[in-house]
Amino acid sequence: MDSVRIAGSVLTVLSLLAYAVGVLQPYPGRAFSVTGVMVGVTLTAVGRPNRGDGA
Picture 1 (tube, rainbow, N blue to C red):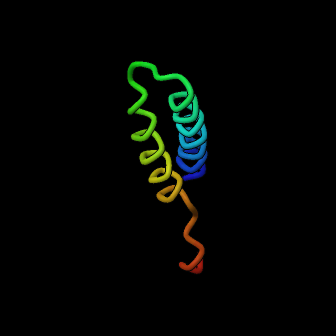
Picture 2: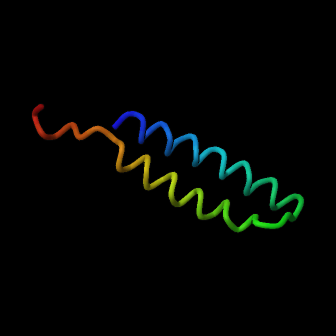
Picture 3: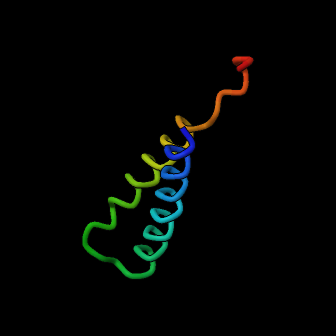
């Protein structure tokens, strides 16, 4: 699950950077950066280790 969490974190950071660039300079497809943030946050949450199961 670590790889899912890392991929989600990387996707979130890259998407936030793409969003910031899109605010400064509009480019085609910039709306996908918002989707990337949502998917990245979801992957980060899903990949988070479960610390309450006693394992």
